[in-house]
Image 1 (cartoon, rainbow, N blue to C red):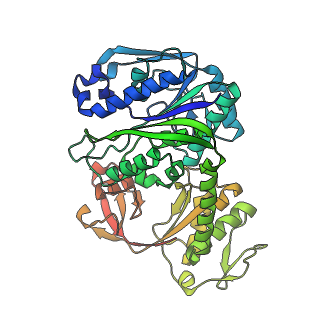
Image 2: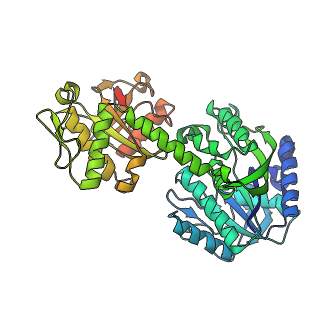
Image 3: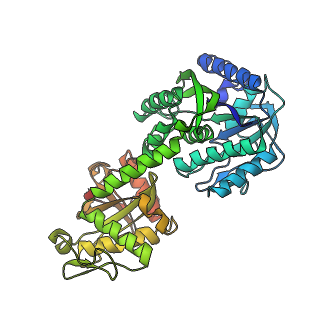
Length: 474
């Protein structure tokens, strides 16, 4: 057997009657949808239910799969300690998923468990499922900070493991939608909130899973969603599978989006290989971007590709970029790069995620070209947050170069604008910088706070502020 059904469900604790104590009646459509989902799962008679939960153990670079023979939990933290759960884990399927992940180079496994207790992202679905279905095992999987592509690949590993072990598996993707849908909600309002909910319900309602990759990380962060990666894993588990999709309901009564969709598995369909299609599109986009890079970005790319492949650093000599054995030896630079001096930051992204960023606030080299070369090497190999870039990654990197204008002291944060100005914070010998126009930074307060944290400054220390403008090259 394999995946016999899949379900997208939210996990608001108050939907549990013993917690909501009547408040769940305000989301009656969600309650009704959970009843439909639970009954359908019982009809499918799964041997194992795989649940992906944003509230299970989470690591930035690793998918945690709950280990052991069993686990238990309760809603005691929600003042309902008498609502308890005990599950038996499917150790055979867990082992098979880990083997598949290792084969495909996906960082996933059973190491590093921090809390054995079941989380509410797992227990809320089980609360309804257990009313109709009892004889099943569970595989509980946390999300990670890895790329969407790796989440999809983990789903493919789950599918392969289900097929190899001949298990009858139901997949439950637990995850709320946006948390910023209403000004009077617990998390306030952002315009990305309703935009996200509308887009995700369309994508999931149509089972158009390829579009899950088009949600940028910054957009999802601003929308304050929690389930997107859970849905991507489910999409991977349904790779090359024709499904009948049914959108059940969507509600936002409390300022958080609760969406339900379910998927009947029909047959093999090689046209629904969404990751393969996305990677082909990505390669095309990267090639087009590379062909349109300006001189600044081309210099950063050439620097990193040369250094990673050969260990040699480009240099500037007689107005040209030179390096022994490099195909562009003698590349002539513009006067702008040769005669100007400025601080510069080189940023690298891969799969939409930051892969390295190093720069200088003030110039340290005799020309802007040399500043870019020095910082490009550092961004690729010396950013302490990341391992050094490998040759295998080079075709997938996206580059940008920010050239800093002069910094000017300002009297207060009122003179800042997150879209136009970067900020420098200083307290004694501690100094931090944040570039402007970052999608995930929406307010001046956030901008200052991040710059302070980078410098080890407490914002309450009232650091000195400077602002600067940049010219960003893509």
